[in-house]
Image 1 (cartoon, rainbow, N blue to C red):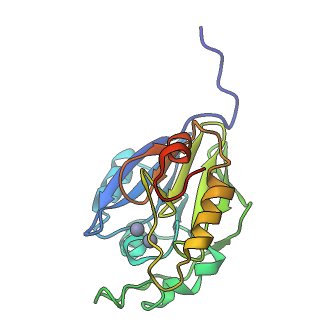
Image 2: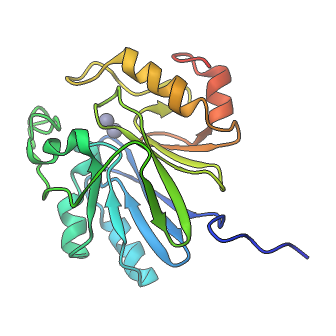
Image 3: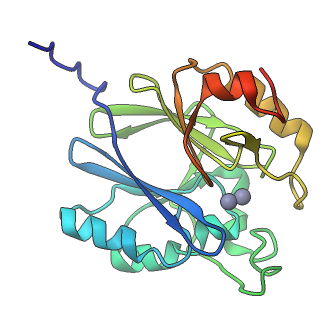
Length: 219
Ligand SMILES: [Zn+2]
Ligand SMILES: [Zn+2]
C-alpha cells in the first residue's frame, strides 16, 4: 500500500512539443486538472489539439524568455484560448512588443504579441493545481530568462539557460556569458542533483549530470 501524496507534491504531467524551424521545446504542464503552456513556438496547433482533446483551458501561458522561437505562436494560442493570461519576467516586458529586441526582425519575420498580463520576478511563487512553483531569474542568454522550479517533484523548466551538455548562446544582443555562468552556478547547480531539467531545445537532463559533465559550465 502506498502512502497518499501530500497536497502540492503531486508530480506534474508533462507533454513536450518540439516545434518550428529552431526545434523549440514547448511544454504542456498539468497538475490536478489545471494546465500551463510554457513557451509558444511556431505552428502551435499540436498544443491546441492536445488541450482541446483534454477539454482543458490553460491557466496561463508562461514564457521562459522572449526570443522569436519562444513567442512566435503566442497569438495563435491566445486566439484558440481567448483570455489566457500571458506571463513573462519583467525585464522582457518590452521585448514582446519589439521585433528588434525579440530578434524576429533579424529573422525576417517580425513578431509581436499582446502585452503581458503579469510580470514575473525572482522568487515569485506560482500556483498550478495544489502545486507551488518558484520563479528563478536566470539571465545571461537573455536579460529576463526564467526557470520554473517545482521542488517536491524535482522538476525545472530552464528555458535556454542550460541544455543537456551545453548552455544557451550568448552571442546575441542582450546576452552575457558571465551572467549566464553566474545564473547556472548560483541558481541551477544549487538545486538538488536529481532535479530533471526541461530545456528550450534538446533532450532533458538532470542538474547532477550537468554539474558534473557540462563542458561549458562545471559545478
Ligand atoms: Zn533564446
Ligand atoms: Zn530558443
